[in-house]
Amino acid sequence: MRLLIMFDLPTETAQDRKNYRIFRKELINEGFVMIQFSVYVRVCVNRKMAIFLENRVRNFLPEEGLVQSLMLTEKQYNDMHFLIGEAVDDVRNTSDRTVII
Image (tube, rainbow, N blue to C red):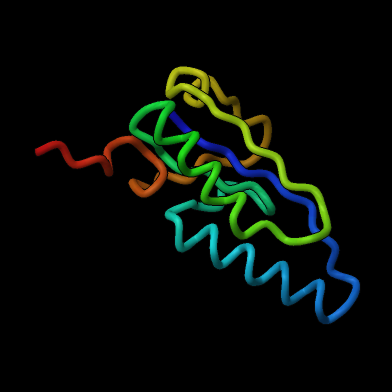
């Protein structure tokens, strides 16, 4: 599974920019990787883990702006088409980073 977080936050005032930086930093600390500006994704083991992560993100939401989440299966995520530009080949953003013991 993948958990996609998409956001559009205000950056008009110094406080808005600070809230934006804090939110972005917290996403990165939770293991999310930027796939496009204001779009972050994280690999999840299953739907239960995706719901758990979504609830963790709720704990550090900024007061203003728009934040959306989307849960996708690996098949749905891999069906993504690049209309312009090239895919970034990065192990951090694939299921290959999962270690099975």
